Length: 347
Ligand code: SF4
View 1: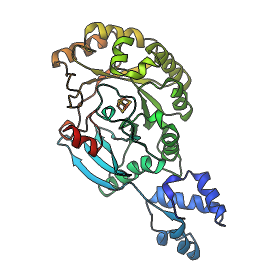
View 2: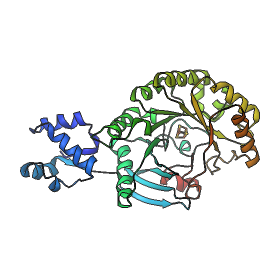
View 3: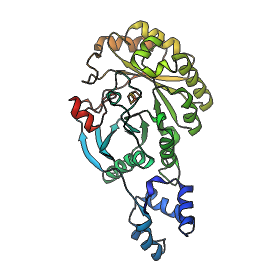
View 4: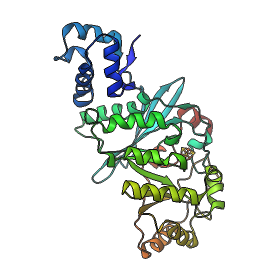
């Protein structure tokens, strides 16, 4: 039966070729054609024998999740809707900045972690994406960009779903993104974001990619209210795991901190945020909450409060950046991603 090429890592494709009675170096040839040159037509793979070229279409396909829709924001952000089978879809977001083109990919349909501020979290986990559907988001968007003479420079696992809840498929996809015969992306250009699945943080360290942590609370009380996962692994446990990662990876952790009016935006919060992160090599991204109908009780703070919060941290010497709100006119901003089916119910 025909198999999907995008489901294979190199050693697995080598074994597959051996199983079908072919030499294993065929796998490397195929990787070079597909990932290196973007060719998926076997007939164009001229260093492969004619007999094998005729045989391969019955053995391998190049199935990508079909792109159902594409939205363009006035600020340059693009959002893509992909069909991932079984009637489900996920969103990926391409975010341009001065020197980067970052693709934010999804790893699950829905999410069981139910963070209060997140639109994806209003929908229970429906499906963990397989490696081909995760990688497929990158491949499909890269293909489109190639026609415009552009390239994705960074990839972040911050779309729909908790990546460390689907770690096997996420890290398999990362292997191809990083592999020199795959997309050859530097590990430092790949970021995995977690809501705090503490025991799985060492997997990020082992993969050598960057770690981002969705922090969003400076006390267990507030964090547990916003992110129920905190009841399982407390703030102390999470911060200890982050410190260990930063030391072992010799890399800064990125803390994402959503500013929500009356909940996380006071100057006392800013002081506490400094206190709990000061011993961890890190930078902090503050993200003013993007209001959406999935969380009507949560509000965005005033500009004055956002600035005061940021200034308080800057004065303490914290490396703090305010994340620009990108793509909010197409509901592509942080916390606003959801599947088409769920969006119809909410909006
Ligand atoms: S923020 Fe991430 S972990 Fe939390 S519910 Fe949303 S997708 Fe899941």
